[in-house]
Length: 147
Image 1: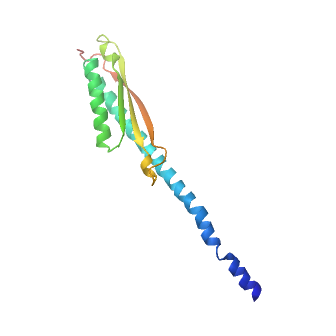
Image 2 (image 1 turned 45 degrees about the vertical axis):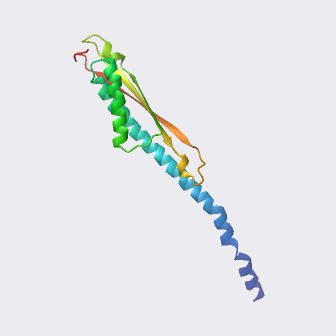
Image 3 (image 1 turned 90 degrees about the vertical axis):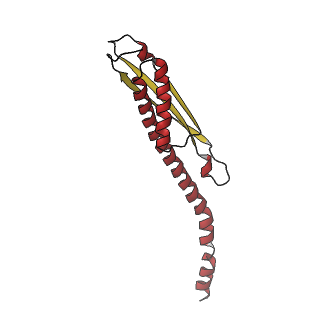
């Protein structure tokens, strides 16, 4: 009888010790999964913004108008998808709009979105931000009038 009682007494604190060890690891794993998901979704939304910006720029008649159209289309796309970026950068290579009529050319747009991750941690620490970048190239119609 004494042996069984001693066995139960020894096992009584094991669950608390296991919880102290395992619980922080599970929380850390959950935060890593959430951060990865947030970056993956931001990447997809940035891809869509780059595609929309390149398409808008390729429809413009001048390189200056193409840059403005790319900037506006990228910002509109990110806003409509509710993508929170602490900083957004849109760089458009609109040199293809300056080529003579009849020549095939293209416009390339690069969209960068800085995604906040520090808010995942309760004490305000953490990795801070990550920048997601996407590129897209759109063909300019060879016979579209240019300015």
